Image 1 (cartoon, rainbow, N blue to C red):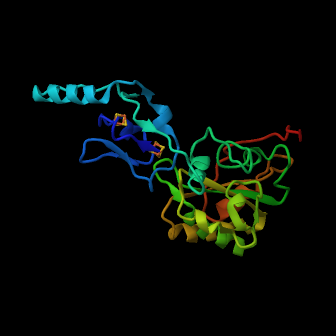
Image 2 (tube, rainbow, N blue to C red; image 1 turned 180 degrees about the horizontal axis):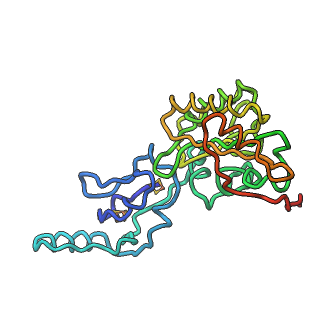
Image 3 (cartoon, helix red, strand yellow; image 1 turned 60 degrees about the vertical axis):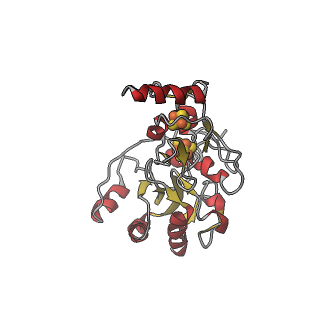
Length: 264
Ligand code: SF4
Ligand code: SF4
């Protein structure tokens, strides 16, 4: 994202809407985007309405009012001069938007958002079988971004433990080799709002995998969260909850799916 120096009047409205604090007002009194921190989420561009006031007039007006200790500020949800301008994104930067703007679908999977739909439901393909555990390893949260280097550190470690990476997952699609977990070299410094890696393992290996993620998280510069899912027994038993509790993790049943989905 870019902010036009000729159009910006430095009102600061866009600073508050950026979820990763990539926008600041410089010593020239105009807003600027830090290109390393910006994840191309388009929140500033879509989140503010726009007016097309003349920037020179607005600056003059603000200057004159300031002599009388008065201010002219636009409504807080408006960029008064339409100064926020999306840039044409090329590879590898375009990946930032694919992972950070929920209105954009991933080219590889055609899915909006960060993971596959089936990871939330296991309802159509039955990806996670009886005796298995599906795990999501999530990197970053709004305000705490993640780079592919953060992810690469963890995916390599998981690959060393011989986990199964879901091939349709957007991060897996960007691996050079799913056997090693290595993510494409040209993406490692790209930053996104957040991303999810989807894996599955045999149930008894869950503690080993959680310990590995925890070790990797200690070396990471972002926040890492793990979600776990499994099939309940015929009477609703939850073998996973017992394993988690025995290893010192608290477990809450966040979502229950009934298996009503069918392949289209
Ligand atoms: S909202 Fe528009 S005019 Fe105000 S600081 Fe941001 S880019 Fe500049
Ligand atoms: S595109 Fe998103 S990250 Fe970039 S400056 Fe705008 S709000 Fe901030």
